[in-house]
Image (cartoon, rainbow, N blue to C red; front, side):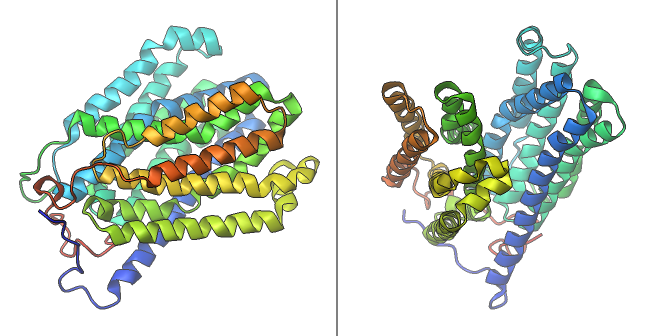
Amino acid sequence: MSARRPGPAPGAPAGGRSTGLGAAGVAVTLAGVLVNALAYLVPVLAARRLDADDLGALATALGLVAIAGVPGLGLQLAVAVHHARHGPSDTRRLTVVTAALCAGALVAATPLLVAALDLPAVVPALLAVTTASVVLSSRSLGELQGGQRFVRLATAMALLAAARYGGVIVGLLLGAGLTGALGVGALTAALAPPALAWLTGSPRRPSAAPRLTVSQVTAGCGATLAMLVVSYADLLLARQLLPPAGSGAYSVGTVLTKGALWAPQVAAVLALPRLARGDRRSRTVALAVTGGCGVVLVGASAVAGGLAFRLVGGPDYTALGRYAPLFAAVGALYAVTFVLLNDRLAAGVRWAAAPLWCGTAGLLTVAAIVRPRTVGGLVVASLATAVITTLLMFLPARGRPAGSPTARRTAPDDDPHPMRPGNG
């Protein structure tokens, strides 16, 4: 059966489609800015409220939540694709199991975390509450993304960020210390799942859609983990291969990489539901927007690389500005890779993230053989890895036909114009 290309929503006004998409893009972009701003504010405020030991412990705690919460990102991807194909369905059980496994892993690892990372014994339990809340909230984010309710998605992203980081910020401002701030953060994070579930709403009619499967969630988790590993591998290698000064300089450069990677991600967020429905034009548009953004950022880095390094790291790093276009190019290529990865997941491709794991293995192998000892040598190796990984992602992969019976969906139950992006 051939794939049907989605058409305009019945009754949608002329030009409303692009207008809705623009509003959706602005909303999601602003929500992303808020999320990153709150995440950045926590360590900035902690540096002024905690001693050095507690500051390091807080940074470690936030890192543990980010790692343990990776399955939540995979769950959101899987739920979004499933919803876009089949409409609303009951994903609560699998969501609860995923959240329980993530939180349980932190609790089970408490003795190891306390001994190896020198954390207070209560911290892993507090982190488990926060992690479970984030993973449970991922279901609502996926439902909103898959249903193309992007304005509500942006609102949900903002609410989750406020719940996840706002409590920690309040605790720091009140002088509650490390455990107090994390305790307040756990409490506010626990409020997020019911709030987002209310925002998402429930189907107004029973759904005959198939259940979301463990393999679909596993695929999303594996893809998210692969993307994080390949994009952070060079930073970890810098700690091993470069002298302390070089490692610090490389970490400054990776700020440009991450900026180029995440700046255009709104295109991938908006395109995913339509990719799940077999709309190849959305893939082309998302790649064009992402690639164009990357070209602009790389060009800007070439012109003002010294200024970029100075703004990020201070005047001591201005001389490294010649490497700025390389760092930006790495992030721009991985941004394109992320769009292609979403496309593979939406198409039901097996081993969708295999090229990313191959790229990571290649970078580790080259680093072990060549052992670059300079910032320039390592970033060139990282750039070569990004180029090869991106090219591999462009290769055709076998997936489920978008127009097959399992790839179709009904319109969202509460959306009279399901194909109009930006419906809030």
